[in-house]
Length: 164
Image (cartoon, rainbow, N blue to C red):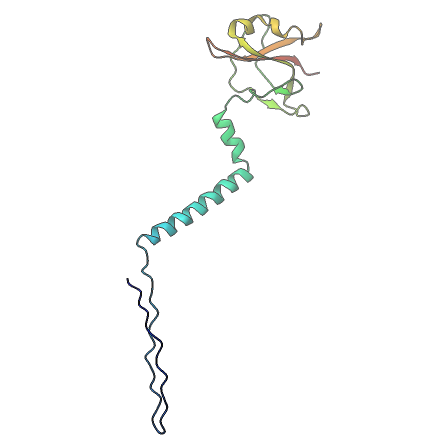
């Protein structure tokens, strides 16, 4: 498309009885519509919908569900002062595998154990001895050790006592 410049029309002298000539109005040039504009508009709408859904999901608790999916160990962030829901009963040096341990509010009726200590960088062999928790468990209290350690790796252990 080329741009053209025209000189302004010369003034015309009106003669009696003759109508003034009217120049035809030039239609303004319409820019060509870019091809694929509909696709861009559709992507914009889809993007807005996705953004809305993400915000709605975060507002209504989907973030917690996603977090639990990505980090299924609900005790991974437990610390002294937290409480743990019911775990399988064990006695002596007995061990029991647990897949549904969870931290709960200490005021909840589900709260059965108090976390009295947390020890990091423990091997499975160290965790099984329970020695790392001895400093956290008072004499006369029933102490329990809860740990999540991959075989051959290191992890954390939680020192627990029964909630009074």
